[in-house]
Length: 434
Image (cartoon, rainbow, N blue to C red; front, top):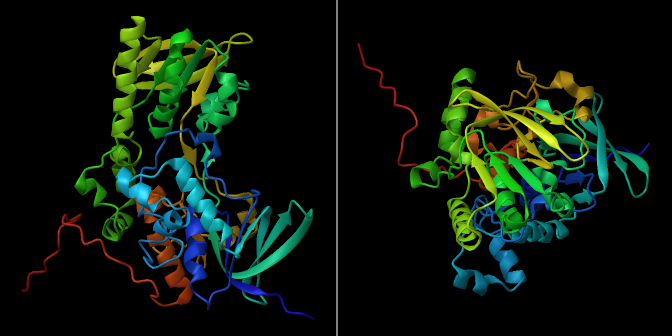
């Protein structure tokens, strides 16, 4: 009987994190890896590819450079291949267009034979005889089920749009999550009023994209829980994107982590400062041209309930937190820019006993990004609660992927560059002699 081929790593989900892992692993001939994704091809947040929107990480924080500057899959190599290097230099722009970043990832994906699109992982099992994991995956083109065996797993399925509980049971064709914005934009623009809920970059980008249409609307509204605050790009804030800070955060008590994350919203949830300025400028110009603006912007608001009041109208109940006052707001469309969550995929349940679970039902993630007792199941972009606000930072992807591959190899092939920040995150402990 022919023995099953056993991969060193099977990656489930091909987003930027696992794509970067696949790119770094390609340069290691001793590793045999496979990455699968149910999508037909790589396409990163297609519903938010709004023209003109930019990344919030610089181009050199790409899939590979910070772990392997000589990689053929770096952003500079992509620019050379597409003959844009000179234009980037002239433009003096650190932050790539979101569409161009997506093109870069697609360029990398086309060159990696280890990627298989159109394969949906349905369940994971463990083969005690061969001491390996077994991934059962369905191929949508062939309509067949296959099994793949691997010593290690890298779960990188990404996040799912978060819908607040008060809106989760409301069915309305123009109640949409920001992830689907561009897919529904044409229908949204047929409405007389549009309301956006959310405090982050996506909410701001959508509001700015809709502002040119505001003069012909009855109302364009934007409610945020926090404020219209810029993301902190100061030098000492940027310096915190380093292994030293992750080491410090990882060893804090869980409740301290929760409190600290709540205080750090502007380190990873704020709005690009230039975008805030552009929004303000356009509001000012509309007031000059039309005498007034058909917009409402209000911070400190918490969404309490969502109800349908007729075929077209959606009624929102909101609470203004600083004043402690409740009020209602009527709109024909509602865009929820309410972020994303990390649901544990159903395909993990057959091996649930292998996984270290936290009390709240989430993963108890080890420092090396594993979640199991054997240190062989890695997670990508699911460790905010354990590793800190840098968890979702695409610029930290090469660092986490270097750690993952070093763990798989059992040696430090990729040298982990310490950021050597000027600031200290905790005091040095000095033991006085007796």
